[in-house]
Image (cartoon, rainbow, N blue to C red):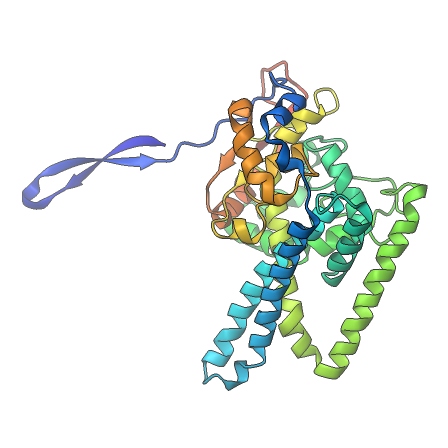
Length: 387
């Protein structure tokens, strides 16, 4: 925080100088090789933080699903409320249910990292069940997300939200660099961005051929992984058929109100969280001449979502730790982050800007990446926004 002086005219014509705290912008994450190793970071973390408890993990699943069930039961009483409260209740339900189900999504994400328990088959059964219920192809996403963790910050090999250099930005992008265009872009990204990524690899790493998370023979996957893509597809088809049957019995409007809108909010939060974790003017990206795993993992940003940090199981404010040690369960991540901070030093970044303000700021300031002019570090790229 910095201090700025502002002159204020007081009563009787008196002039007073008031010191106002101003927030200093975050400095860039160092792009030099860190003076510490992953082993040193691990030694700084209490050993119990790496222990995965099946019972503890299950307790979070039960807690979240219990809240989701309670919110659903509440909808059966909305018609008893006097007008207009019966209408107001639905948006409240959508937001609350969307937030809780985002937390459920995060737990399934932990299953994909085998951070849920010591038993891989338990993690995969739980992850497949929960993610399929949220229309996510579990194994398909698990494989591509694993590659994201293996190549974070790499302009050549990262999997999602890979920024482009100015020369490769679409010609029409500069016409969207205004409040109206920015709002339209964010609306599209937050509503259909996630399904577009899954179906057509929009915003993902370029591949030769049709790259879809639903296509077993997509170039994303190797031959030994293709059977798992079929399993994901069958699970999704089963859930889709179940939803169809529910719609025929209860009506499409009922299904959209109870399930569809909360799912839309889940998808919006998922895109927001992922985008803000890896998009910030202080974060570098690297081409193949500079990239290494540790510097890439450190090119992430912890964010503050207020009370939603807890609802989202701290995937928001402990993401640096998650990229360094992805098999660590979420309920130990805060302790691990605090233990690492003294060693990470300037390599750790936390931005407490409210996420909705940060989303607009990053959409305005982080449009493409370029190396700094007049520097020998041609393989280190930073966000720019001037066309």
